[in-house]
Image (cartoon, rainbow, N blue to C red; front, top):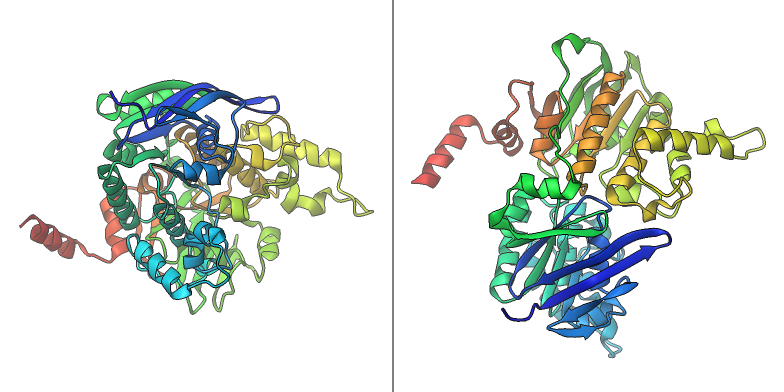
Length: 512
């Protein structure tokens, strides 16, 4: 066989006493789409950051086209034709889309004058491959989904022989995902090699040629996708069987009929209108719908993060005057944002500080000083309860894997002993093992009496976890699905506005 375009030999990386990678080897062939799988903390992102020049290995060797190289920085990685589409958004929010797409090229340019019309024209050509978004818009004005598309567009402008995608579809709609897959297949056809990181087995098995599994920073296996099943890959990832990804739902004997949260006629005269929600004790209520349908805005309105013009919110029958998020927290309503690193946790602060941040009033003494012992006890209790894998509670959250960062974000909400938790995409970008743990935790919280609302773009999660589902379309509730009505087809039909007869007609036309 020809030499691999990229060859990793026995790479090891330490972060203090923690070994992120131990003697990991990996090879990538020309024109191959190669999946890298593993739980959060398995070492995937560390390995990709080493390939991209963000981190330096402590031991081992990297070969590009058979030649040993030292990748001392991201710019050197790009000079070798190695590009990385980061999982986390790394854009300049105050610059335009065009400026972000060509920022690397702009910084290399030595001219004092910039031809913005040419820049915008070239950027629009690249952006149109993904979505018809005006590249003159500021990145700060874009949704998370659109920002992810800009990250991908940036990578497509690089002259790469190897392109790394780290969870590229985590924030994308199904239509955007299909477009991205077509582009990746085109890149493969042109001889470009792809490293594809995803926790979504369906994507890996529809797109990739081979799959390499890492576990606990060590190499486990590499196999042709055609020779294994999703269950095989999951077993190698977690080192055990996951027989119950979703816990048992609320049983009929557990249905109390007691309403915890009642939302009536809620609206902001902009993104949503006349929203009515009843959340009962012991249940997990799902909210589905297309990205941009208003799901997140409704949650923000309930929690005081978005101004409300109409309607009322009742908690255990009592009307709540919620104007700010502080009002919501004091009432017993908390919100877990879909943007974990932007709004869910403080990356540079410790685990203990993150868990206590909403509960500082209870931990602050008469002199205005935080009770450090009380903060530590609180952090230890929730770290143990949520099985947060860490060195100690003083570890900065930035040092944790994505799954453990999400557990810290959940612990922060639980520390104030809420009555209602709204969770927006609670398992986005999290591996299958961590997902299973969080699903079990949510069911345990519901059974303890906390009301839970879950917003999710993953239909299997909505159907597998939730007791009922409300589907949002264009800022209104399109319908409600009970336990015996919940199917992917039913959710999609309500979310898209296609009724049963219309859907049958479209399917018949397509078949013809």
